[in-house]
Length: 303
Image 1 (cartoon, rainbow, N blue to C red):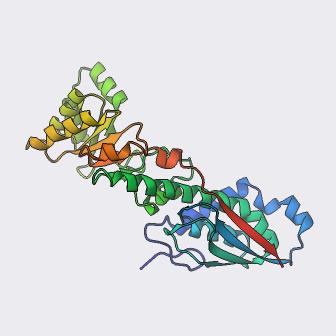
Image 2 (cartoon, rainbow, N blue to C red; image 1 turned 60 degrees about the horizontal axis):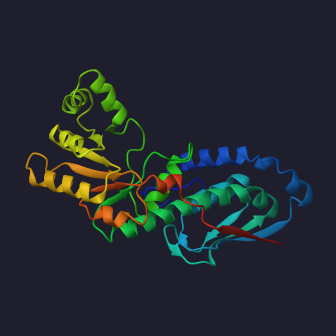
Image 3 (cartoon, rainbow, N blue to C red; image 1 turned 180 degrees about the horizontal axis):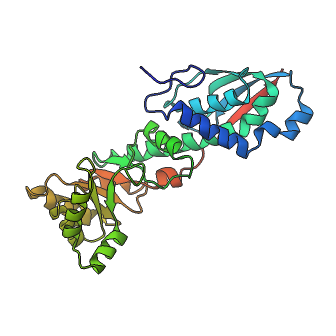
C-alpha cells in the first residue's frame, strides 16, 4: 500500500515520510514567521479569495509537489491544489505544473517557503538528471550523492537526487563504514596497516555493513582491495590511473568482486571519462551542495 500525505494524496515511491515533511515545513514556516505576515495581514482581507499558478521559468525536473502541498495545507486547509504535471517529469520553460485556489492571504504568506523548497528540490533533481545523462555516455557507473547536504533538508535533497535518476550514498554515519585518510593516518600512527585496520573493523561491526576504504594512491588502493575492503574509493585520481587500478583488480580472482568508487572534483565535463574507467560508482558532492535553485514562480491572481 502506497503512503499518503496528511491530505490523503498518494506520495511518490521513495518519498520522505509525510510526518517528516510536515516537520520540515513547519520549521520553515516558523523560521519565516509566516503566521505573522504583517504586510499581508494589514493589506489583504481574510475573506478575499485568489488563485495561483506554479510556473517553471526554466527547463528542469519537477520535484517537490508534495512539499508544496504541505506548505499550503499548513497555511490553510481551505487552499486547494490541482497538479497538472507529475513529479519527476522533465518540463520546458513556461510550463504550469499546478493550480491553487482558496483564501488569498495564507497563499501569499506561504509563497516564499513553498518556492524555496520547490526551487531547491527541482534544482537538485535537475542537476542529478544531467550528471546521470553525461555519465551514461561513458559507461554504466551509478552516480551517487554524498553527505554534503543542507542541515535539516537532507531527506528532501536525497529524495530529489533519486527523482533525478541518481542514487544515494550512505545516509548517516551509522549506515556504513567509510575509512578515510584521517582514520588511516590515526591507525598508521599506532603501527596498524590498512589491511590490519580492515580486519579490526570487520571484527567489530555487523556483517551487514559494507566496509569502504578511501585511497589517494594506487598503492593504498591495492592494499585496501587485497585487505578485504568491499569498496575502494579512488580519491582525486586521473582517469588513466583509475582505469589501471580497476583493470588490475578485475584480473585478480581475489579482488575481482571489489567495488570501486570514483570521488573528488567530479564535474559534468569529466564524468563521462570517469565512467569510462570501469568504476562502479561515481560520487558527486555537487548534486546537493552546488545545485542551483530552479527558476520557478507562483503567479497569484486575486479574485
